[in-house]
Image 1 (cartoon, rainbow, N blue to C red):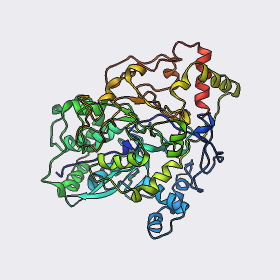
Image 2 (tube, helix red, strand yellow):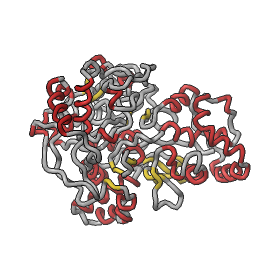
Image 3 (tube, one colour):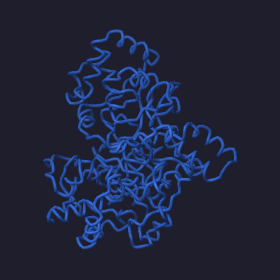
Image 4 (cartoon, rainbow, N blue to C red):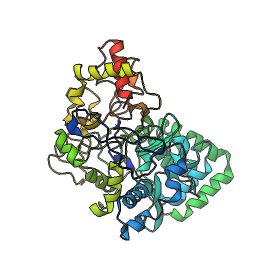
Length: 488
């Protein structure tokens, strides 16, 4: 079979996640006022830059602009360079442009996404992705055609796979960290399940936890010989290649990650740094523009969990590089960059009590939260060491497994750019999050603040300890701080 190589849009801010900023924008969201890092208030509202695009809605067709995104980039490249057209082009790129990254054979993706509705869901919806209502092949939003590999049509990931999803109140939101996405299960469903299901390998030769993850698919293939034969026929044109190579520890890693987390530099992806790290998907709301970075005193935008990506342009180019292709030009990514800058966090539909929020605001300053979260939208102004934060330190080895100070794997990272640390994330849209800590080891804000017991500490890279700065506060203080977090 043809070798399957693929990447994930997870570094579109580096698989990383927390939340980000500012009042809502969308079909049912009020406009935000102007604000900047110079105001002294890290949560000062930002101006609405959406140009009328719908970025938050319960109506998926409305969020996809009722089909009008198609052709926006052609109009933009043809000279229609007004901001509204540019942002529409950027939104199209967000959903449908994988920037030529290596992908998975289309015949495999389409077969799996259409034929396992109970096990995987149409459009992999049971794995947390969102079915594209316009796709005849039942593709999810976040997977799109890419450059053929050795003449084989392929499908790769786009920004929307990780940074678009359904909010707890049922609305869809662009820029939301998709904490329902079972990335590890998705990769195993596209690699391990076909291999074992077609009898190309024995289940006993693979990691037991990984096999358990795809067992429903294996059971369906075993029980439905016609479906198994259809899969074999679909993949016959790929005969002669090789399936991706994963050893048992790698398979076990994919099976171990909580939803909403991943290691985006691990076999069989194009770049493997041979360091098992886990990052929570980060929201794309309220990323500071360069002028705000400067005015707030930040050294750079500190994107990705490590803060290694210094600008949004650098981050987007990194997505392409990690996907195994050449970095796109600034002109090519400009519409996407501008569109991402325009994204705002949706307002909490059930805002906490105002008096409790006011108390939490005072505690935010008096209890030292602002010492690490005083940048735009509550972000930090530098990367912190793991000795300071006490969270799982595995991420320090990202792109540098030997901690030599030199990036591995041919990555175009400048000398001294690796922080080997962890940033303080933006603290907006936190009401919509499903995972906490940089590795997603906690499932709620109450666990983070020690209002509820934390799970057992566990082992690297999924330790649940660290960031215990609020755990010694009185419960009333914790509740007030939590209310303040949930108000933005």
